[in-house]
Length: 334
Length: 285
Image (cartoon, rainbow over all chains, first blue to last red; front, side):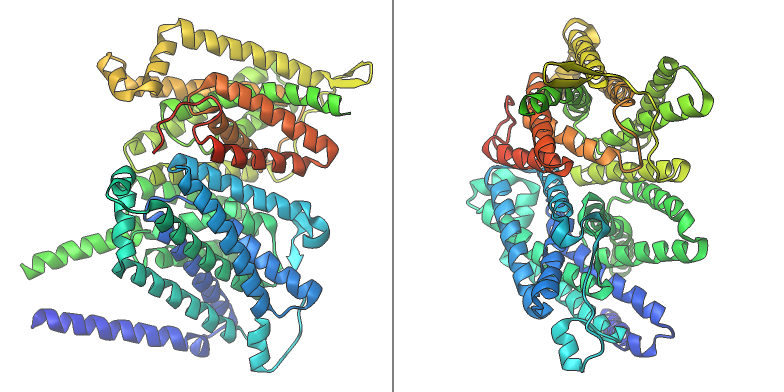
């Protein structure tokens, strides 16, 4: 009875939070807050997508590359051929899926795992970043690339062009993406794939011995993760209307995605989201209150925080919190 | 021009070989992805710059101090970050190292600023027939070979060197042989960092340093180590010369970015064909 009421309370609380999140842009006191929450939503989706792989022991450092491929293709098709981003997005995503599929298949088929996988993906991300820099006639090189603005439009056209005058539109797009990402996580959790992947994460040789198709499972997960990252990248690029090969594509960008998931706890559904929220809030706080001069110090501080967290709380902030809470709950029940 | 590029590539490969030996030792013995190896190199260059330009200390003394500082930084991070994580899962070690990299890079950014810093040492360029050889690269090559030889002798002839090799081949058996693993780890870390510091000294006349200087060198060192086979020094040597030559040929023919692109592409191709590295032996999993 007590337990039932607890569950009910939990559910109603979740519903309340969801309603608040949905209504947030309408109630938001300033566009700045909406802006920050859009960033948080987009990067949460990306870091959750990263955790799809990360929690099974696949440390990918090429998610920046997927952002870059998808976002640059969409933007270039729009600027040069005025192809609407909604269609350009599909082409960009196709490219991401092909790249992820080929590189994933090649890596997993030939037994590149662990350290080797991490280094290979690191090389891939640097390669993509360099290719973007080299094609500077098309992509603008190191200086970055600006997406053409088309000015105010009616709503249905705004959706097609993925450019909104009002931030609210983007907020809902990003929210849908995040919910979708979380839904897919749940789907993976419930499905047969989960059992297979957990087995692979625990012991790769043993699971191949009992007849699991390791290559297919891992490649599939890699492609799904890459595709969502690509969508997130496109949304981010369309939102800021600016792309940069170093801050969005290179190794630094890939690492910052990884940091967000780890900080929150990549083994839990809400972990990456909470990690992203904390990191973006912290960065913005330092930037606003201390100015850009201290951005170096803030990053140093956040590096130290990451190290302390990894050493003492390897489950991440949310993961540790949940562990503690569930322990307490168990005591209460018995 | 091609001949010139190849020759320069071989000289460059020699320096990369020395750089890669350090990483190879740490990767092979401590079994950790030493993500801030290039950043150690960068710190070495910054220290030399600070001492020579800022305090007018003689160059060779400055190099010695720089090597000592780099070793100290690496040992500090080893004791504070690597040691507690030796038994942790791979991903945690990896991210902690990446976090150290972020810290070091931003520390240099905060202290030295984002501009390029270089010491104006201009060495003449040797000209033989149609081939131009920068003396600075020649010195670096000869010096690198010298230190690589020293390391080789150290690993083959001394007790500690043999112990390092034993640990890299089989940790468990090595500990049965009364080898203090933790001590070997510390010695390896110091040795690896010292090699980065020495390479930094050779780099002074060639490059000017900036906060993003280290990243590409970390990646290229890893490329060489993985190509050569983890813990395999001759393989690393071969890989360093291949990567150095390819990089130089393509940067001369097209542009410096193409040099790096070709090296990375080569790496991706080879890793698929031979995941264990060029000369490496690794059980397929």
